[in-house]
Length: 276
Image 1: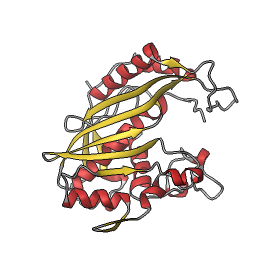
Image 2: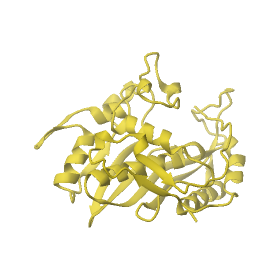
Image 3: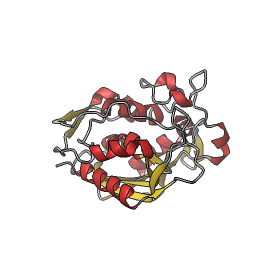
Image 4: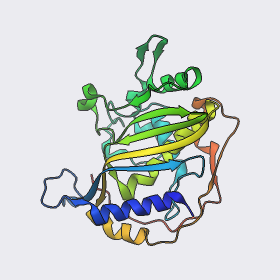
């Protein structure tokens, strides 16, 4: 039985049973028909995934791992802020006529900063520290740059990662300011679990824990019946993640270097409405 499913089910039940509704409050998000998109939310949800035990992809419905990896490589490897470098269309609503999402996500990771060891962007700094100083308590990436927020078409949701090595295991904390639980939760969990696997693989480390901290974990009003149906489904065993063992350079990974062995899931939910 997949532990990721159990974590997801418990989180959804907690939000629905103990969360706070935004009904009566002024909220920004709208449905495509113009109706205000209200939510039920919990403040500061914390989920822990032991990546050494299983890959945390849910089996209640399929998560498109290839597309999720493509997006995380777009941000962390290509360091791009242009949707023309991305194979999916999920960012189209936030892109301008040239395909840019502004100075967000990949743009922030590609900016070089001065350190005593030389000039690095944030990703290369992580790779340098994991190789030369893995027990540092300062391995942090932050995309929430206040001086550039006015030039971002969307403020970063998953905005920071803290990496920490214990023994020979690479652990990470993903901080997220806000999350649409139905649409994005397992997508983000899988993405950053893959990121930890990649960094561990090229640094000769084992994977440890991924801790996911969500400041505003919410379920939209029109998603409630979909969530209730989803969490009532059967749960299957977690699949095994297979990574190309020959890839020892972070910048050489591609989506075909990752496969899932034995992935069984329930049916996909069709036509999920997305609030913007």
